[in-house]
Length: 308
Image (cartoon, rainbow, N blue to C red; front, side, top):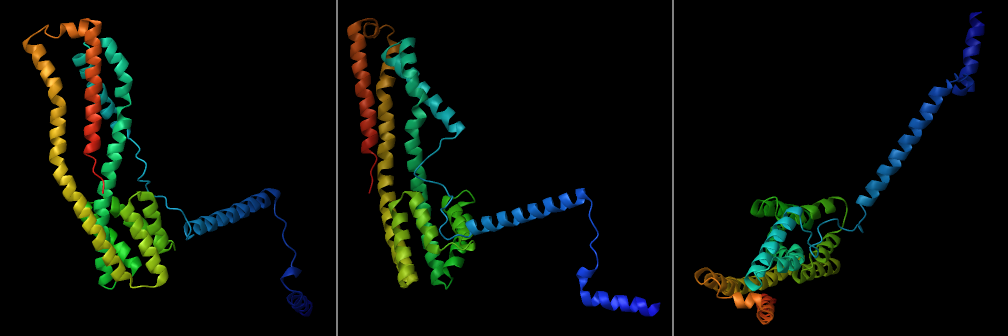
């Protein structure tokens, strides 16, 4: 009997694992197993696709588009309140009429759209100043022997210490370092920044850097020279801005003088301007004065916008 058992074992080993009959699974367990296997395969495919997309060198940057300024809800309320206050003052000074304020109110409500250009210009000026320091820091790290990838990461840390975590270029350099870790090329991250910034200096630097990287030139010398040129240009812009800052302040004061004169005369001599508000000829004259006053404000604003 023992010989028969041994003979059966030897026969099963020779026939292989498939010789043992598979135990049938209950229908519920088989269905659950198939669902788990399908979900696992789908998850693996999704992870592989996500990793491939993130690591793709041709990925478009997801950073801020500096050519478009989006107003926050707080900014909308703040500037709309300022616009409505200005409309109320103009309606009182030029018409002394509540109906005139209702006509001017839409202008005050859309005043934030007018201020959006100024806010965008201020952000671009801030970006330009921080970019100047950023490329100077980058050039110093490259001169110290850092590779371009390590220099970008180190520059981001230095800019964070210089401008804080809310610095524009600190966040951009951190984003570029993150892109380099995802196998994006150095040229692509700088060209992406140049395209989103809308600044000529940033775009020119990105183009020069990409050309130097492709041609295999002296990258440190080229970046240092380009950084010096951009630094000189930014210094000239800052000098012009400093010289025009006092004139801009004077213009704001002078723009209030006509309104203050009318309010002063109205306070010291009540009824002096009644003829200007109660007759048709007076209203036409005040409408002409309002048009001239508004045109002078727009002209002064345009004169003080000096671009290099």
